[in-house]
Length: 127
Image (cartoon, rainbow, N blue to C red):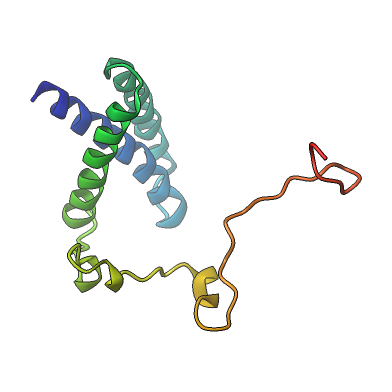
């Protein structure tokens, strides 16, 4: 139970630390929102040091708690309720709203997630 509460506190510190600058940048909030955001992100970094060994299992468990906290934040703070698109029993209902995904479909090229890094002369690195 203590580990779970640590994960919840860490997730909330991370969410608050990112939400406050978003309020400032996107919603016209006061620049003073950045002060508690910095404190929250510092708290988040400190809380991470209290987690167990940095193994995949620890971060996978934290990730699950983070997702739950993010959904709860959306529901409680932003008033966004889960919709029919959030049906975990039917993942085919999920649709990306990302504009670049408009290319998906028959005969259309999907958005690529591949990044190619080239040298100044245009050649591939390592080639």
